[in-house]
Length: 305
Ligand SMILES: Cc1cc2nc3c(=O)[nH]c(=O)nc-3n(C[C@H](O)[C@H](O)[C@H](O)COP(=O)(O)O)c2cc1C
Image 1 (cartoon, rainbow, N blue to C red):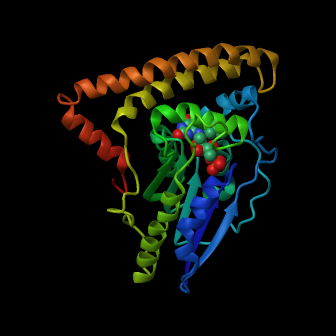
Image 2 (cartoon, rainbow, N blue to C red):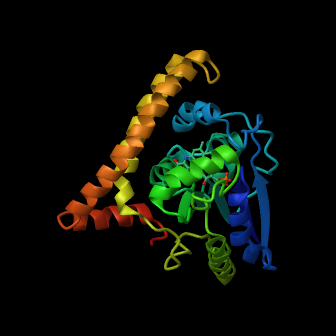
């Protein structure tokens, strides 16, 4: 019997629905046992988010400082044939509950020498978060064999408004004039193709999973226009996170005041760096063709576009 573990967390339920879609074929298979580990922060994050509360967790998220989780209901000494790590992106970084899991002693035992698939559901900026996760997985001795990503359907520009409004109101389409935030439900249902591919490979033989299973299935789509914005954004986020952390603890007044300054800066950054770097990328595209192709292939790995 093949053993699969699925680690997941979701505030709105979106990532859990994606997990269900991907895992349905695995669960329906007689030869595969699927265990689920739902991460639960010891102090739940609010949803909908209060405006300032949303930004208060920014430094800890970007600096990947683990927060307490409720005890993990998992046998950390069980050997799994495959571990699916489902996570969402917060501030170009893996979400805090997921970061906290990666820092746990249980994760160290579970992930060592184990094939891993990352499954991301986010707005549409996931490249830097995945780089950070890759580095952690490597340090833990895990083998990343695939990465599948689903992003919000309404596109880059619209989602800069639509997704935060969803986070602050709790509704995916709070006003008639904003497009619906979140991943398209039909795309979510179609993600069961990833589960089908895993079943085929897991049942083909009993050998360890060493190669991608999701190649050719459109597991990721790298938007080359966002590569530079993500790199610049991540550098700026790291600097600001250090600064804001130094101002005081999460709920201190000093950090709150620093955050207000930061939020104004962030809005300016989004309104300038993202369109300017996208425009530059477009203008320079003919000259940078080979470099862009290399970058896209790198970020699309290991599954490929
Ligand atoms: C604090 C916070 C920061 C976020 N930052 C990003 C981001 O940098 N990039 C991105 O693509 N999505 C970002 N999102 C959107 C999430 O990745 C995700 O799509 C959304 O929170 C729904 O996930 P869930 O309901 O499954 O938890 C952010 C969400 C939150 C709550």
